[in-house]
Length: 533
Ligand code: NA7
Image 1 (cartoon, rainbow, N blue to C red):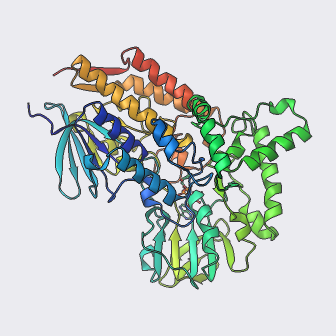
Image 2: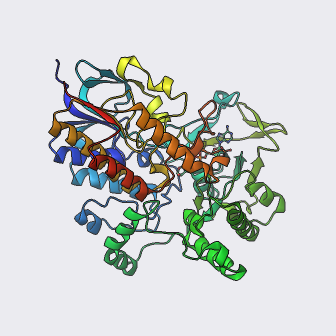
């Protein structure tokens, strides 16, 4: 039997890949990391567009595994910018000597399970061929960008930019007529930052989103000291919370509050900022009555911000409940529409028909642009995996199987694909939770399983089809009890033509998920088949 070249190959050098690499090396595994980018950072390497920030507070959106790191890395703002997060991840890479284990600019093209050798044979686009007993995919939940299939897309003669693949070199938009397609978090963050430079900004909006101000601020020394003092408690709350952050829903039940109390609670939740608005009341994304109240509150806020009633109407979400698409976290988004040189095109009323050399033609007319910026999202949670030709036992193809809804066990293991462990995959809470902590939990879980197999002398571990079916059905059942399924969102695959529909992340909450995972590990992995060769 040929021995694999490595114990473990880890694909991706974002939060999850870096964490797992550090800890795999510490546990004595021979690790090879493969990363498509030229350096570490994952999401924060690619999404360099102006205004890019995390919508989880910096003190929470950071690794918790090393006390010295937590004490010594000083975040400067409540919500860190992309450059600051990328600096942080570079610091982590230096501090924990991550880079020597990686080969960069290596995009994995295929991974094929070799049953007789009990290993994965992995190939990259550059022709690198290697192998490992274990394959950990840390490829990210929002890393496979999607560009809209608009007729004439390649005919545009001006500059084309994409938020998810923003150039490193400075982009000069001064005096230019800029079109932005897409009003999810990326578009909403970008738009107010380009209005000063551009001579015209035209936003092409397919669906209006709920956006709540970040209430971002610099972290001064006093606040930093307080955060440090409370860090242990804050982390405990995060590890035990539903979304990996210390914030919980407000304690007062909606039904027990009178109108004034409700208004006060909505106001307080609004000023907490961004996604935290959805935590105003328990059940806000479950009970249509509470959700309608949140929507009414939002609409009052919008009315204060946008002066033109027609623009305001177009910016009012019509087709999804509050929080069922990720709430955007903005800094001056709606206010940008009060500027004379910023206009909003509502694609529901005026769809795009064609992109021409000069600009964008809708059903109403052609608008000329110098630059088109795509902020059109990702093939979430499955896209980065199906982009790779992954072949499991008996040459089964993940890409083919996942034309249907993805079945995973605990979001981590896939029946038919022994020794393949997916971090933050479908069926895990990742994209609904704080990625920094879910990445630690997912990395630990993968390494715990590998360690179990090594200690017991198993050469492979594979999820049983029944266990995966049950876990997946459980996740879908939980989602059905909420309002989430009604939204055409990337959570449900609805943003990608032809993608199987169904709620992709596990919605039962981060802590509950961890408990499920731990219970399985503590019982010696029921739901897995282990073999020794
Ligand atoms: P999102 O949230 O998926 O947003 C993509 C946006 O692009 C959204 O407004 C889409 O409209 C729009 N879109 C997609 N395809 C088209 C076409 N063909 N025509 C017009 N508009 C289109 O991606 P983001 O990058 O903004 O954010 C992703 C996550 O990153 C975010 O949730 C945070 O967690 C961080 P739609 O709403 O589908 O009608």
